[in-house]
Length: 140
Image (cartoon, rainbow, N blue to C red):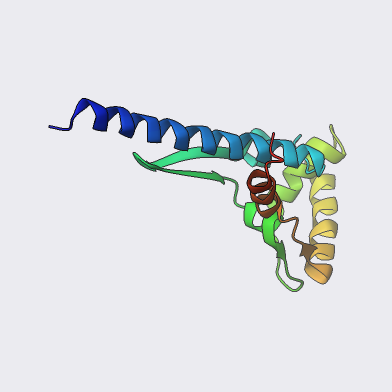
């Protein structure tokens, strides 16, 4: 059976890891606002709301996003690759033109997707910037 000191040390390490993960989580959300990355999209597609802390085991926490396009925000998307149309349709309907018909939103979404296909998208490198801020002590 582990000693009382070992148990306290173990709990303390867990709390430190939890605080660090929460710190990265908070800083990430602030960075999204600072970089003006859209947040007023449907709840299941909202990048800022998708950032979560997940415990892999007692001492390992992972901070990440659950939306499928988070990789494209971080690293960009090269030209010549088609983007899925449905998330763009939902974005058009909720952000660009509230109250627009679905048919018109699909037309606009295809025009946006065509531009993404031709030009690609540059990466925003949000997580890299967050980690740099955390390491430099500039985190929120």
